[in-house]
Every structure is written in C-alpha cells, then in structure tokens.
Length: 334
Image 1: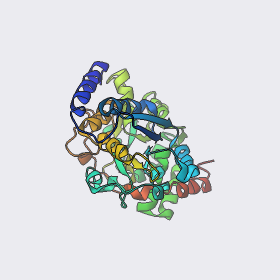
Image 2: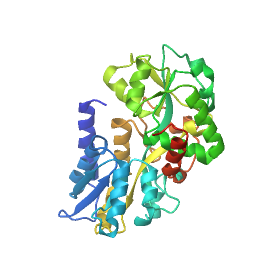
Image 3: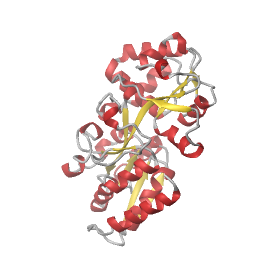
C-alpha cells in the first residue's frame, strides 16, 4: 500500500474510531510489553492513542525476552498487556493473564484463541514454500512437507532452524505426527543438505537469486519484496493444501495481565485491535491475515478459506522448548 493510501486509511481510522465511545480517561497510560517489532505495530498503536486519548508506553523486545521479563517481574510487573508474536509466549505466561470476555474471544475463529480465554489472536501468518519461478515449475512443486525429503531437492532447500516460526511449525508436526515421525522427517531433511539461514527474509532473497529453489518461510515476507521491487521479482509463494503442518496458520495475539491497574483501557485496546479498521491495517500494511470475519484480505493474498489449512488449534503450539530439545538432539540446532 502506498504512503498516500495509508494516510487516507489513517484519516478514516481517526474519524470513525473517534466517534466510538470509550470508557477511558485522557490521563490514562497503558503499558504494553511487545514481542512484535515497532515497525509492524507501532503505527497502529499510535492511531489507538489518537483515537482514544489513552497514552501508551511500549516496551519492545524479542518475544522470548518479553515473556522471560514478565515471568521475572511476576506480580510486580508494570505491564497491562502482552502483545505477543506467537502463541508460545502467551501460553508461557498464561497463568498471569486475566480471562477475556466471550464478546472479545468470539471475534476470532476458535483455533485462534486460548481454550481458557486467556488470550486472543490478532492476526495470522501462514507457512508457505517460497520458490524460484525460473527454476521450479508449478507442476514440480511438492504437495506436502514429506515430499521435500525426496532426493530431487538435495542441496536446493533453505530453512531456518533457529527461527521461532520454523520451530512453531515443527511443534505442529510433533502434535499432528508424533515425535517419531517428526524426528524421521528432520533426519531425512538434514540428509538432503538444506542451506541454513538465520530467518525468513534472506531465504526469500536466496530463492529469488537462485541460491536455493525452495525456502520454508512465512507468507508475508515475499510481499514486502514485491511491494519494493515489483512483480518481476522472480519468487512466489506456494501454499501446501494437504492439511499437513506445512499448511499451518500461526497467530500473533494479546493478553491482559492480572496485575494490570488499567483493565478497562486494556480491554479497549484489544477491542480496537480487533476492529475492522485495525484488522484492515494488518491486511494492507503488514500483509498478514485478518482474523475477524468480513475483513478483506490484501488483493495479493490467497484467502484463508482457500489455503486448506491444517486447522490445528494454536493452543497446541506452545511447546517450543520440546521442539528445541529435539532439534538439538539431532544436531540441527546448536
């Protein structure tokens, strides 16, 4: 979305949201601990301040750092809200979170919220295969993760074992396939000599320049390249429609701390993030999937209902420590 388009969005956002009545005070300050980067959520948090008059103080950090900080602070934490990149962070501190109202929880699909109503998903990220269009034809693309172990892909695959999203996908594997089958897949993948990357972005670049044929990434990284370099960029996403863990849709989410002194303002923030306009921000600006029904996805995104997702409840994706332990046992993660 162009800058002008975003400014129009902001004007509409302010005009519409400012007409909504909030039970909050101009002097209120909401403290948010965010495991999501400022570049992604900072603009929409700024608009929340403008629309509601609630001052916001945000502490940014990696998701694991923020979760660890909250556990260290315990009942002395100054945070009102944990804005988490993934479910793992939220599940780690679930006992520290209040129970959210059915009205909030019901705004998203059941698989995108806590079974105990402790957190709610705000946006979705789909796992995909990014591939080089000059090297791989559509009829050659695999239909499942299991097909990636075929020797035809030896030396042609990229992955990022240290990346949280990759580890979440392996956690989904352990849930759906069991430990033994997941370990076997990892061994066979390792035997196929994949190229290792620190995260998703360099994999997309590597696929485009022919360094790899396929990379295991989240869907939205490609669209950042396309928005900057145009449709001639020689990489595209492939969605696995087999319903296996490669079809996983992960959510970012939020929960309210029991120690919050601003419960009302915190609920206002979460409702704001689940409003159609905020959901449209995620769809249009960060190329993520909105989770609220009726919100249009970005034109470049394949609709969620057309992906053939695994449908796994995100609550079962919290055991990252078990996944990290398995990856270390197989010498995939140091």
